[in-house]
Image (tube, rainbow, N blue to C red; front, top):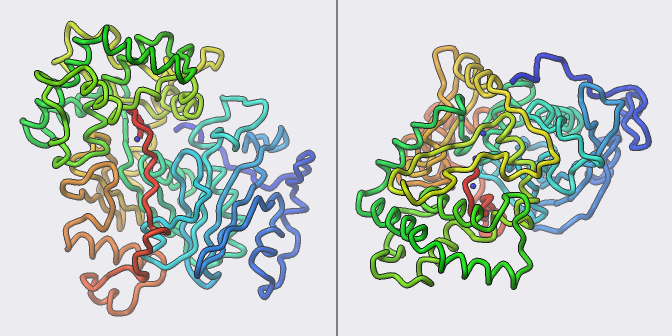
Length: 477
């Protein structure tokens, strides 16, 4: 489930001697293997690339790899780390999609929607500082969106020698944000961008758009039902926290980072309404219990199913420290009011600082998101943003302005945080599909003449096209 400076300096990616990891200017300019060489050999000939494993998949080659990156792209001689990537190889004659979730990379073969549409290759990158792609020691000041965009840029330059056809970049949620930031800093790399459900928290202290959204999403009946359960969970705090404590004791869960079980409990409860709309559909409101007659267990189970009582434990938060660090230094995070909880909430929406260990320093840079937002409005080219009508993260979204070219914002009716091109109304679906095919350089002549004829170049694959939405219950994109 959440949001530029860095930036003006030109990146020197291939540098003089870099220490033992072996990234050097001399190595980077080594002769390319002949075109007839096996694709695995061609990939492993790239300086800094190493194989973790190859997994079979019909019609493809699938590789899990490590790629050596500088910890700091501005000072590449000051240490390196191994960044995990995967490669779903179709053919070097096909276009390539550069995918990132903005979190960990899946090591199971998967195909993003644009990859299926264009029948292409897919390179998937793990976001820096998500384990195991974390420098050791971890200098957290090197976790910012410019450094992450520079990771993508450097990997793209290395792989472009093998995959010479058009490239698109894509991702959903934080991955959609990542694709957007990459385009902002390296606009010459990609031939198109498809960003799904990408939040755009331009002014971190101004979050009234989220309040307005939650006051009108779905139906009043559903909103009232959700609000009532959420309120009841705070009214019954004592018996429900006893259940939480029993669970934590049995699981060995601790709450050092957030501060106490009470703080963690309230954070989970306050995520409830947001979490429902992020991952559920209006029809799912029928499964929400009637707060007035529900047992303690029914209230507890409903909160747990939607928000997840495990999330604000030290054990789970440690996985997402990089996200909360970024939310508290650059991306921003929502702070919604929820007036129906007045008199019951002790802490309100807690800031990202509460979810990051105190020994990691944080300072918020308010100019970063404004820079990206202005760039998209005035300079975006071949960019597409897809949102879900009922997804809270779409309350603050990217918009294209007069300075943008061949760029679009679409909203899928009734969709949640899993919104995609397939869920758009037919006319928009065809137009969006045609644009993706065109940007990838594989639009059939009939589609060029009439975008209404556009459709994906491959059929649905139940395993390969399974949606791996980053779905740990909690308020984050």
